[in-house]
Length: 111
Image (cartoon, rainbow, N blue to C red; front, side, top):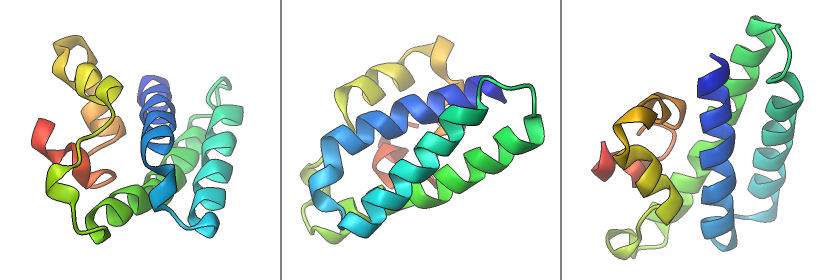
């Protein structure tokens, strides 16, 4: 669970760097709040809290994919290069579940 949480933190940060201009301020604030909440609990041993924070961030991070596809030029957009590299490495396949296609439709071509 902690590895999945760490992967989700990493991929969400990279996606925010790449696509933050596509998101409304309200969505950015919610994603960043959920990201910070997960960062605070990921170092603990409280697995139910970690799981709940992961689920909240997955839910809010889905808006990144929504924003990508609502721009109309999603076919030409790619996930951040760091995400492509992470998913291409078989050792990092757990990132597929951490930031699944349901959380980031832009990544679905890589899975």
